Length: 193
Image (cartoon, rainbow, N blue to C red; front, side, top):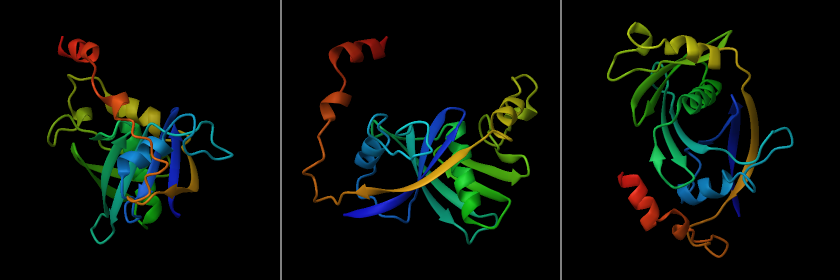
C-alpha cells in the first residue's frame, strides 16, 4: 500500500489537510471523505481533533516570482470549491514553508490571492470582486482588521503524518456512500424555497 504525506493545520478551531499535489491521489473525493472524517480521520498525538473540514491539494510552481500555488479544495461531500479564508491561510503557510520567499500567489477558483509572511505571521489579500481589496472600500466592514486579528500572530499548529492511499483498483474497503449525499425529496423541496 502506498502512503502520502499530509500536513494538518489548525487555526481558530479550523482543521485543514494540505496535500502536495505532486503526490498521486487517484480519487481525491474518497481520500478526503476518509481522511477528513471527524471520528476516524487523520490524527496525530499532538492534534486536538481527528480529521479536518477540507483537504487542500496544492501544486507549487516555484519557477515564478513570486512562487505560485494552485489550490484545489475538496470537501467531504466530494465538491471541489473555493477555500475559505482560514483554508487560504493554511495553503499560504504550506507554500511559504516550501520555498525561500516572503510572498506567494495562490490560484483558487475565486481568483489569485497574494499571501505574505513577516514576523507577525501570514496574511492573505482577500478581495471583493476583481481587483478591489475590501480594506480599501470604507463602505464595507473592515475585513483587513478582522483578518489580521484572526491570522496575524494567531497560533497555527502543524502536524505532519503519512496516510494510506488506495489505488483505483483497490475498492474492497471503500464503501459506496452515494445514498448519504444524494438529495431526498425533503432536502430538494427545502433547497428550492
